[in-house]
Image (cartoon, rainbow, N blue to C red; front, top):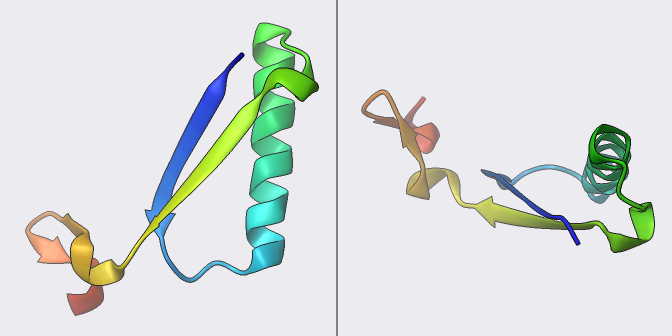
Length: 61
């Protein structure tokens, strides 16, 4: 039972998240031959002020 966690900044639409879950599920199923019914996708969203890259918070860019 594969469980895929996607971490990303807040701000995506519900439709984008729906498409992400569908595409990730399809990719995992095709790659490791797991039935789609057994694949779970968890989306963890974070506020831009709680993520930094190269010494700069996402909210400060």
